[in-house]
Length: 620
Image (cartoon, rainbow, N blue to C red; front, side, top):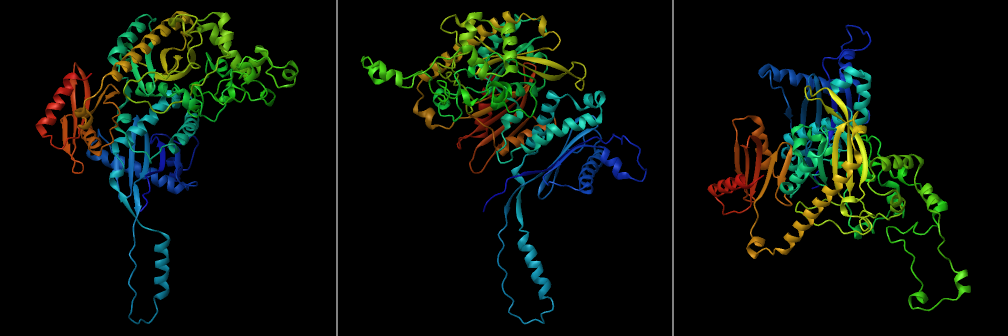
């Protein structure tokens, strides 16, 4: 029978130390309880006040009851027959509580045998009513293994970190702006975030542990550190190539929150191969690249859609669709080339009749200045001039020509974890590549603002600026102080970033070429591969195309979280008989976790331990 996926029942954020802003009667306990609730959203469209207070009161009671037995470790998870309750304490006195319904399957009801005995018929009416009520409310069988406590808590904590990154911590907003401003910001953010939580997708341990490092991380890191050493103090560098990242040594030493790299990666559009770009239904304007390149994006909020453009800028800001422009050449090319096709007579060398040529529809020349004004809004045009004055590395005479280039780039599907060559797209390459050396290639520029904690207090957040320099699907992010950006020599930084991205691109292409020339043997193709996942400092390194979804690995991770006395967990399934290992170790003074999956049935426990020892020696 059809299985119903898990679903979020309600989500609430409360602070039990808050008091009503206005004077209320001492007998009115509900008013005091309601003042402690900062945010509430439910699956039901309309929830009564009493029901909301009961749900929040139950969460408070469970936390207080658990603190009686363990004052330093309060309640985090509560299991029932049909739901899971998660309590998260991200900041002192602030609690995030969510209730999630388990996956369920409708239960098959067997028909009751007919009663052949004769009765007096007194209770027949009530019996029929009960049967109708049971038919209207079907019963379900809940699946307790459909949700993992660690996955739910990790997702809730990522939501909090994302809010903290884009708005600030709960404590800082409450102290600086007040409770009403905090409630408003929580309403705007968590209402959208909560109901975009897709439980139909299976949980992936890779996402819960951190972002994936680039497969060429050991080769890219020296180039990144060399570029970082040329920058002024206070600029932290992060290399981005969706879905992978490479943090510089200075970036990791700054102890930035994991949400920062995840947020910056979501703002970089993935590159779309040319044959997929041509099949997209949206029209590609000949000046779309000129209207969007080198723009300084405004601050990106949670409600923006990253896939709508670079840094989530809506398409309405980059191009205005005017019906008077539809007759221009290439206006409806739908990603195809806007070049005019020659008539058959011209291709065969036959000179056409002038009278016929005058009557035929011809392509009229359009003033480039008027074309730019029509296809770009006034706001973006001003941002273009500002960005070009600050970060353009090309000659002023070439910028006007670069605005007329055609861009067929777009979003890509998820790339494989193995390094692959960048898609070859003549229209999406940097426009001055043929005229100037690669180190002078034009980079797309944009900036955004985030809130990062100070080094001393993680609850005191301060506004910081992030600068993006991008060419195709490769980008570098610079985390700077918002007050000192004007003091940096942006032209020198842009040239050095362009040179570094060119060297990294050569590394990726060279590695892809080398890998394609190696032919695997038949034994390697037929033999199941051992997959691993290594987590350290909120980043992960995994086997190519390996997605950790096994319940054994999640259970092992949850056991490792329970206490430091548990260092390794070995388990083996029945169908299939795969080995799963979860281990915590300390390599070169850095704590890391290793997750291993061995898919060979003939492997013994000693063989699995040998594989784990080799992995520890040769891993990052």
